[in-house]
Image 1 (cartoon, helix red, strand yellow):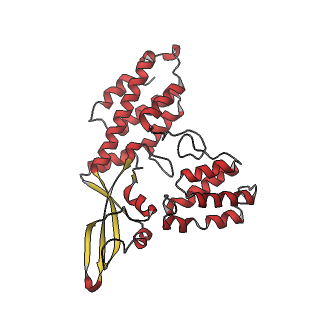
Image 2 (cartoon, rainbow, N blue to C red):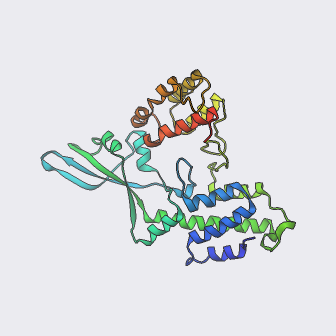
Image 3 (tube, rainbow, N blue to C red):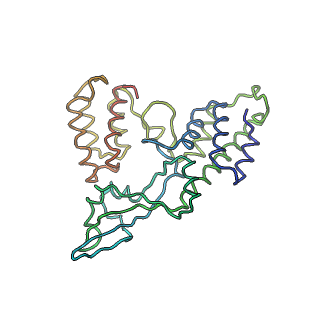
Length: 304
């Protein structure tokens, strides 16, 4: 089995890159054969793609700056933006940032010497709130700024969480360091509890498997319309919109992947972009349609 002692030593040595350490930890995760541990290591190595929820240590509260134009050539650039009064979807984008890059990318960014990193606002968000800031001037572009310290904290959090997890495993299973630990069975349930407690926490546990989930307790169950409704609401979708989608899916009846979504479902989904941009949802327009489509596909029991 991969040496716990070697992993501990590497984690305490800042000259050893975290990506290298995570690869060693992956060997241990596969030897233990616990899905939640394996999934966390793989997500940190490969990045949190799609709609996979990120741990709390990867959530940031950025600042925002914008450029403006006005009459008679008036302009302003690099202007701090207050966002508390904006529609919910724009406000959420501006005030919340989920850092999804793989650890290797984060380490590369930190090595580059920049003190902050920016993400341009989608142009539709800029257009939707262009007159909400300065009198007689309109916002023409905006950028969401995440400081370098956020990325430093992510690297430190992964190192610390992995070290804590290893120390707890070692305390519960002393023979885990032996060359042949077969005389002591490491409980998968114990490992999963430790991972969820130290890595995710606050109910944001990742459940391994094919279910569409936001947390470990909110899932879409095949042919269960109520579970579809609860999942849509858990994604920040307005209840009235979620009820409309639920009714449309039920009325369309059973569907196969070859048939695709029914006409009522398609019509209900046609309002997604409008609701998202107007702030009826707290989910971004760019991900709203895919979130609903995946949930409905799971309701039908279609393969992922």
